[in-house]
Length: 348
Image 1 (spheres, one colour):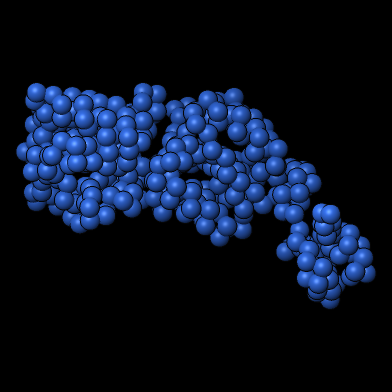
Image 2 (tube, helix red, strand yellow):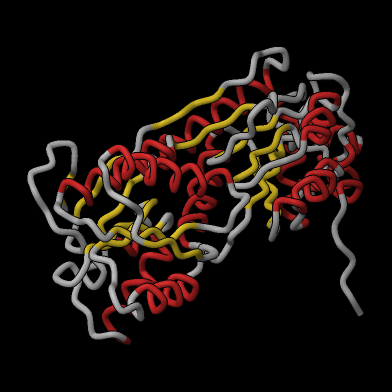
């Protein structure tokens, strides 16, 4: 037979206190005598009782801005991308360091975000961080009405009145172009993302804008979907042409690694002897000796820290104005690009 779970009523009976005293004993800021708390905790230890954090948050109805459940909802997409896997790990640590717990929800497309946020609201979250995807204006209004602050991470929406934290994607794209143009390339290709993603389009726009300013015509554009395999396929298409590019910029490192694999192991090309390759994000694998991928680094730890601090501040002051933070990227030169003296670059 299944063993019955120990409840707070069992602990109350063993400790000789009320059930509400048990609840207060497990709430750090609750008013309860020290001796009573110790008696409750000792009884809980003997019985093997652990409070159900989710159930406690569900039972704590939000009454204005004063009552908090200690839960922050996080919605993100592209779970297979190692950049975002690392972001979620760092975000979880930062959220917990501020005294909150994180409820994670993954989505495949932008259109699923509103539904995911509705689900998270059932857990009476105190705030939400939405990573690299967006929410609708209607959902933003719903969040404001329910006093649930939101931070968009690595995304922004023109005219949407919510907090946002992101790299200067257009400026990062420009850095990539400067690197390739100033090192003598003139047949420069880009592997962009699917249309409709403002972040990716901004990277590509900045890249192409500076190409035009420098008097260089974009050689060819290919498209991927933020996966290694799509980068590999784009690389095969790029170098199956009669005249191939002498440089490739990918709007994500994962796709750049796919291009690198296709070039080296399927087409017998050498990097950077046959072409230079540049990515965007600086995921851990970019630095591996077998890859040594040049890239545009995002200050991700600072961005995460600021996103959490902005959300916490907004949860404590619901009347505060939305903040929009932008950060400069850094060019990291490794072995996949030709090198010249570029003072703004960090060579590794």
